[in-house]
Amino acid sequence: MKTNKMCALVGNLHRYNGLMPLIKNRPLATLPFDGKYRLIDFNLSNVANANIKSLFMVFNEGETRSVFDHLGGGKEWNLDGIQNHFFVHTYQDFIRKDDNNSSYYDVVIDYLRKSKSEYAVYMNSKILCNIDLKTLLHIHQSRQQDMTVVYKKVSMDKTQDDDLLFTLDNEHTIREKTFAKDITTQEEVNLCADIFIIKTDLLIEILQQKQAGGVLGNVESFLRERISSSTNAYEYTGYLNNIFDVLSYYRANMDMLDTQKFNALLYSSQKVYTKMKNEVPTFYSETSIVNNSQFATGCMIEGRVERTLVGRGTSIKEGAEVFDSLIFPSNIVKSSATVRCAILDKNVVVDEGVRIEGTPEKPVVIEKGSHVTQDIIGG
Image (cartoon, rainbow, N blue to C red):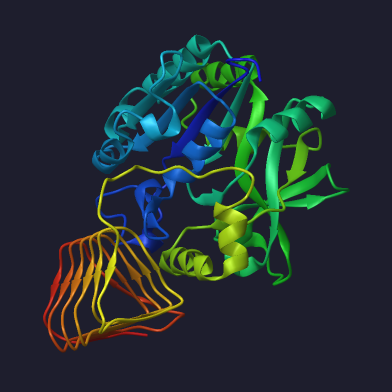
């Protein structure tokens, strides 16, 4: 692929309160996934696999610390090369209101111009997928439309109110669009994945028009607005999940215990890259009992773990039991404790004999840095 054929933009401006307290001090994009990954790794890997040299990411103010900590110099995604560039922009609400969003428009337009790319691809951080952007570009070019948007057939329970849905006349032609909150059917729907390809010059023109009109908004909202019958619709048939609340996040992680779904997302033709850490392998003692679970590096497993995803550096003590849960990095579950259907954020300590129990429909969430000394029974 020709260098600079595409540039990429990743948006993360929406705040999904249904994910609290997991996103209290981090954006959705840096939530851990499947033990050793972060959700942002999938967009970054999509960019790396397409040989895209220029990347622009935008985050809300107060949410960038975990982003910079995870990205570092961008080496794992080939973003540290001489010809490669990545930018992180902080979207400040108080400035946006005072200057009618002009500072946001200026920085995006400046990025697009300096990228010297013919096409721009936009992706939203809440959509989890491993998509081949090179193939998407070829399809976009062959159908000769102004814009291509990606969609996925999903059940209604995998959508939230602000999700955009399509009705199609045929495989590629959009008849109408509507928000999920206005749909009463429980049947399968066409979910807009908020992945777009558009000519860079056209995107610059759209942003300039909105800026001149004093319109508050962002790239995603303007691309959604532009969707019409002349937009090319591309159906993505691989694994995709829509993460917008605790339950959807929990279920997406638990999907990785299904071999078929795990392979579809992580072992397709495209590799998924993440931040590397030089740690010792996980240790399983003679007292450990493990069934259908996944562990990142540096863990110490002495207790019982079933149908659970465990992050780096976690310790499950002898006599402890963990079932159907997501355990973030650097946690300690002490002897005789029981954790069932729960999400334990980073640096959580569960004391001896304590029970934390939720249900598959309502997992219990333990906030980062908590020391749990009493039983927590939810559901």
